[in-house]
Amino acid sequence: MSQSCNCNAAPKLIFSCSGAADVGEIADRCARQLTREGVGKMYCLAGIGGGIPAILDNTESARAILAIDGCPSACASMTLKKAGFSGFARVQLAEIGLTKGSSPASAENIERVAAEARKFLQTI
Image (cartoon, rainbow, N blue to C red):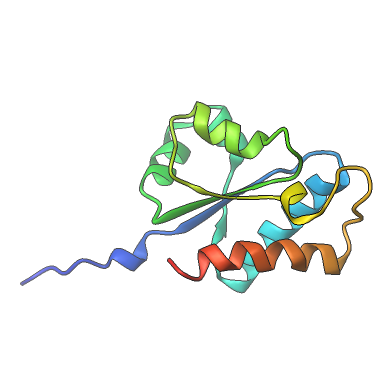
């Protein structure tokens, strides 16, 4: 019996800010929306920070990784970097005009972020 590579089986993982600010809520809700759409899979950023072996292993085997950072502190990206991950894509909300403290978690703002994230996730 021959085996073939099912390279598309590896997930596209999404790690989002889920901070207390409005932009954290937008990032979190965007990741959840993209997961519901099947574009990628929201995954546990706390598990990365906590060094949970199974979460680190699953992330290592991901086809692609996307970080969605709510504010310029870039907690999602920094957590991934501290865990040794590099080469991941990133959406930073301030770079697309959403400012901490003045960007409500409206459907319009969530979709604005999702549109940026889809540009990366749908090309993988």
